[in-house]
Structure formats: structure tokens, C-alpha cells
Amino acid sequence: MNKMRLHIITTIGLLISLSYGLGAQATFSLSEAIDYALEHHPSLHVADLDEQTAEWQYKEVLATGMPKVNGNLDYTYYYKVPVTPTEDFITPLVTEAITGMPYTGEPEYFEFAFLQKNQLNVGLSGDFLIFDGNFLKGLKASKLFIDLSKKQVNLTKQDIIQNVAKAYQNVLIAERNVNILENNINNISKALRETTLIYENGFAEELDVDRLKLSLENLEFEKKKLEQVIAVSYNVLKYQMAYPIHEELSVTEELETVVDLILLDGESSGEIDFTQRPEHNILMETIELNKADLERIKQAYLPTVTGNIGYAQVLQRNNLFDSEAVGFLGNGSVGIRTRIPIYDGGMTKAKIAQKKIEIEKIENDLSEFDRGMKLQIYNAEAQYENAKLSLENAKRSLALNEKIYDKTQIKYREGVGSSVEVTQAEASLYQAQANYINALYDLLTSKTELDIATGEILKNKINR
Image (tube, rainbow, N blue to C red; front, side, top):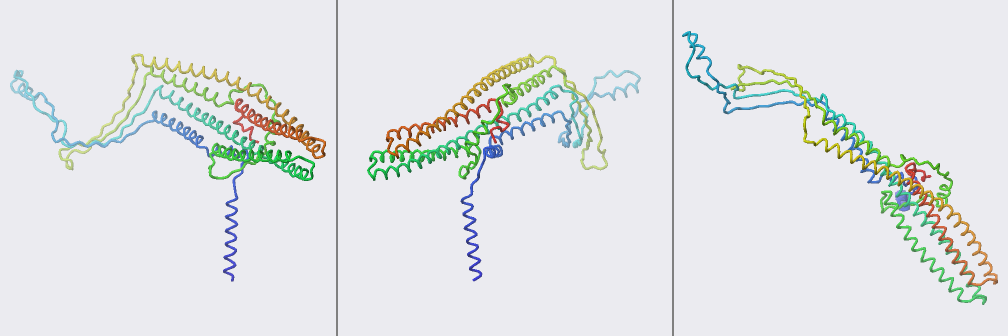
């Protein structure tokens, strides 16, 4: 009996766990959705890898100026020992010593070997840089390249935040649209029931009932289409967040709350801070990087000084394992090498000219970007102000149309209004609702575009 009870309890617990697992889904506020994207998005991971690559490239450049030490172990066996023809200087000396007269014969030569069959060389050698302007300027350029990579990460973050924010807002707009349709469906369903009752009592025409049925069917069809739009919007949001497409998620923000927070934002100071835009900073850093590279190229006119030091032990024997023969003999050396450029055919001059042109082009790009940024901000501010005005007007119009529709319904139920008036009021209400949704969308979009233009989007000002 106890075993059966334990089995039942275990089974119930398992079913509860499965039910919870099946029903659970992740929920995200706008800020949380952006944070998730910044943590998981593959493009940001690639940007981070580029930054790491830049850091390793700097270390690679740094290593070129560090001392290099190598160990040497060389063995050579001469199966035919090389010889050098050497003039016989001994015979003339002996002849002169004996005869007392100069030696007048033809000089003779004999083969003399300086090496033995086996040669073993063991040693250490080191090379080090004393002066190289190219190395010093290249090191500076590598540091600037690291900074450029970091600024490139900020540009990637801006794109991710922008895309997630827009996708999230599209979900809110679509869900708000469905909510409005559901309210309209409830209202039409109620009106249909009332009109059907009035018709059955002989105080309404069948045409009025049919009109309401058609309106209800149209609304339900529009709702089904919007539900598909919501599903697509969620998939787009998942994609922009780098969230698994097959997993469920829901949003926690309320559209009106987001709009109210946007409207609470203070007015722009009117000052343009170009450094808020990562594109501006990237162009500035690119100019500095190219200027550093220009200085590096100019160093080709300067001499390069390197040093070397080495020590070796050399063993030479005809019989390598003859312990009676002479052992290892040491030798060491220290040297300095200076390379002085004299004429390179104009190569350095050509490189300098090309780099100067490249810098001028990037400076022109920066100037054009700053001009475009000003225009973008001015236009975005104007669109944002227009969107706020449009939303206020849409709110007033919606409230007025709702009031007219309610009064028209009351008049119709009391028998002092016509179905034509109801139809007209209903159409006006639907149009006002559509205008209101469009105004909300325009406000969200224009605020996002303004934040992008000013660079404020990187500060997450839209992530309340």
C-alpha cells in the first residue's frame, strides 16, 4: 500500500514538473531584451574577436623589437676533407740557411687541410634591436588599431540595440492592435445580440442584423491576420536578440507606458556632440592610425642599428670519440650592424604620397559625416515633434469618435437613430483607431531614429 502511494505521489510530481516546463516561457522587458542580445549576438562576438586579434597583433609588433636568443647544435662529417693549396715556404728558408744564398727555384705547393673529418659546434647566439624608428612608430600604430577595434565594437552594439528596439516596438504595436480589435469584436458582438433581440421583436430590420454579422466576421478575420503578424514580429525579435527561434518568449512592456516615458523626456539641448556617434569616433581613430602609419613610413629614411652576440664551443676530430684528441675550443663574438638607407628608387616617397592622399580622403569622409549627422539630427527632431503632435491629435480624435459611437449606439437602441448613423460612426471609430496606432508607431520610430542620430541609443535611454 505504501509503495503504491509513493508511486502515485511520484507520478503526480512528475506531471506537475512537466506541466510547468511546458508552460514556462521567458519574459523580457525592452532593456532585458537588449541586454540578452548584447550578450549572445554573434556579430558582437565577432567584433570582440577582432579586438582580441588587434591586441595580439600589437604583441606581435612588440616582439619584433625584443631580443632574440637561439641555440645552435651543428654536426658535420667530411667524407672528403677540404684542402687549401699552400705555397711551400719551408724549402726556400732551409736552402737559404744551408747555402747562404737566395732560393731561385720555382715555388712549390702542397695541400693543407684546416679541418678534420668530424666537426661539432654547440653555441648560443642573440640578436637585439638598438634603434629602428619603424619599430617605434609601428608600435604606436598597433596601439591605435586596438582603440579602433574597440570603437568598432561600439558601432556593432549600436546596430544591435537599434534592431532589437525596433523589433520589440513592432511586437508592442501588433499586440496593441489586437487588443483594439478584441474590444471592437466584443462591442459588435454585444450590438449584434441586442439588435437580433430588437429584430425578433419587430423593431429592427434584418439588414441591420446582417450588417453587424458582416462587420463581426471582418473583425475576426482581421484579428486572425494580426495574430500571424504578431507571430512573425516575435520571430523577428528573436532573430535580432539571437534568441532560439523554436523557444517561446513574451514581452513585459506596455505600449502606453513606453510612450509615456518617451514623452517625459526633456527637450534636446540643441548642442550636437559628434563624439556620441561611434561612426565619428571610428573615422577620427582611422585618421590617427593613418597618421601614425605615415610616421612609420618616414622612418625608412633613418638608419637601423642592430646588435648581435654569440658564444660557441667547437670540437674537431678525425675520430669523434677519441678522448685523447683535443676537446672543445670556445669562441665568442659581439657585433653591431648599421643599415644606412641611401637610395631606394623613390619607393618611400611614393608610399608617403599615397598615405597622405588616404588621410585626406578620410578627413573628407569625416567632414561629410559630421554634416550628414547635423542634417540627420535636425530632420529626426522635426519628425519627432511632428509625431508628438500627431499622437495628441490622434488621441483627441479617438476619444471624440468613441464618444460619438457610444451616443449613436444609445440613440439607435432607443429608436431615435438610424442604422446608417451607426455604420458611419463605426467606420469613423475604426479609422480613428488606425490613426492612433499609426501615431504610436510613428512616435516610437521617430524617437528611436532621433536617439540613433544623436548617439543617445548607446546610453540605453530608450531602455526604461
